[in-house]
Each structure stands twice: as structure tokens, then as C-alpha cells.
Length: 402
Image 1: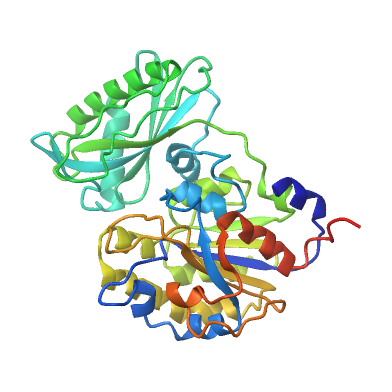
Image 2 (image 1 turned 30 degrees about the horizontal axis):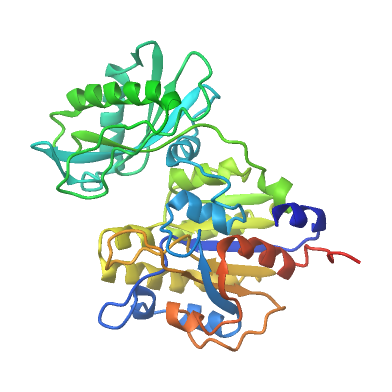
């Protein structure tokens, strides 16, 4: 599909705002999902005049990570472009990534008597993260001739680059995560899935041992869990694929990293969602496409905090008119995956989506919710179809064939 789209692209002055409420989809608790329990008069009013539906980020029954979830809605087949979290976190933190590098995204975690008691170290403050990451950088500079580079992310997140002196064989990053995804279990060993990855896995094991010694007296953040071993992939840029000059407005490094990987401009931003929207407005005349990422919806879902997730959706609803004031040619609101508070994590459930443009039917959904979106004109569609629909509704695609 992407190859076909590339030959149909035509330029114009249209604007597309693509808003991602991370982890938007949920499951009912007391007969309501978080989206249904939230106060959303503006989202509901927009749904009434929009094309609504649900998208499948990867495929039926497949629970996506944040990387595949975003790649899908950006129009890249996540089964074709399998990208680890490590490269995304490293790029998002502004690190230079070379062809000889293996990147890994880690969580600071709490371990007691050999078992994980908190996979996210209580979401330690970012300042605390920066302090202990500086300690790691001071004490671990090289292992077996391989340079080790640490970079503090937000809260409990950290990126590590293992910079080898020579190019690695294909498949060298194919290593299992050390995070068992559950408290009460022991951390896993970095297990290679092929011979090429054996050298990297052995180095990662040594790195974890050394880091554990440095962090042993750090209370909540006394251990590292490794996720998403990866190296630099080849992927077409957003402008090559879709003919759009794109701006990413995201406060969390991993999402900037993903946007940077596909060639979006990725300024480092901090602040509230309102600050993000204000920044978008200040750049509105400079770009064709705006990726606006709202993180905290997902964070509360992962913590099992149903009310907190609903409140974050309600807060966004209050700000939605600020986006509508710009009167974009296409406004899309969706999530990258579902994160039901009931499950305290990502899930395989389809994600509500709405697309507003002058060229939709509308009038089929009375509110914006998972169940109501089943009535919409988009039906249940693969996430990779959202970008072609955005381009078509922006009148950026020529006719196919004679």
C-alpha cells in the first residue's frame, strides 16, 4: 500500500493534526470504560460530525508495544518494520546512534531478595534518575573494549548504548528482555535468540551485574530491567512515504525517538498538554502534519488507576477546542493501543478513532467511546489505513489508474 500511496501523492496547503491519546482504549469497570466514564462533551460533539471507528494496531489478538502501535498509525506496517524500544529511547534523548551500536531502553526497578517488587521504581522523579544515571556513567565507561553510554530519560526510564568497535553481524540485537513484566518474579537473563546475539547478550549480563553493584544502596532504584534491544534500521522517512513535512510534539523521549526515526522534526519539549498545544499553534504555518502525543492517559492505565485515566481524558477534552480553533483540514483523534486499567497494561483490544474533515458522512455516533465507535463509518480497520485516509481527506492523493 505504501508504494501505491507514494505515486499518488500531490502537494497542497492542507493541514493534518494527528492527536494520539496514548493507551486510549479501555475495558468496562462497573459497565463503563475509562473513555465512557470521562467527562467529554467536546469529544462527543466532534464524534457526531466525524467518521468514527476502531483500529487494530497490529492484528487481531496481538498486544502491541508503543513502537508497533505508533508505527501502525503512522502508516508503516509494524510486522515489516520491527523496531525495538532501545533505538527509540536513544534517538528521543538526542543520542547519536551509529551502525556499530546496540541500544536498549531500561527501567530503574526495585529488587528485594532477588525478586522485583516494583518494575518502575515508584516512577522516581526525573531529577533522581539524572543523579543515579550520572553515577552509572562515572563508574561504567567500558566493558571488554565496548564503550557504554548512559542517558537519563523521564521518571524511571533510561537509555543505554553499547558501542562496539566493529560492525556486528545481522541479528546481533535479537535478545530477550530481562523484564518479566510482573512484580514478584526474578529478573530474566538477557537471552540471545541466535548465535550472532550471543556476544551482545554476554556483555549485557556483565553490564547488569556492574550496574547492580553501583545501584545497590539506591533504595527504590536499585536495579535495571532491560527492554527492546535494537540497532539502527532502514525505514523510509515520512516525507518520502507521504509527502508531508511533519512536526512531532511529544514530551517523552521514546515518542520523539519514533518520530525522529521516520524523519519528523522532534524538538525537545517539557510542560503540560496545554503547553504542547500552544507550541503546535506557534508552528502551525511551518508544517503540513502535526503529531500531538498525550502520554499520561497510558500511564494511569498501566498503574491500574481507572479514575486517573478517565480524569486525564477529561482534561484533554477541555483543551480540545484549542485545537479546533485552528480549523485543520483533517483532525484525527485516537490512541496507539488500548491500556485498560482493569489489565494494568497494554492489550489487544481495538482502539477508538475519529476523523473530522469536510468529506465524511458523520451522524452515526452520538458520543466518542469504544462501543459507540462500532457504529461508525470506518468500521474496524487496520491502523496502517489511517494515514491513507488522512491524505485522501486532505485531498493529497490523486486518482489511481485511468
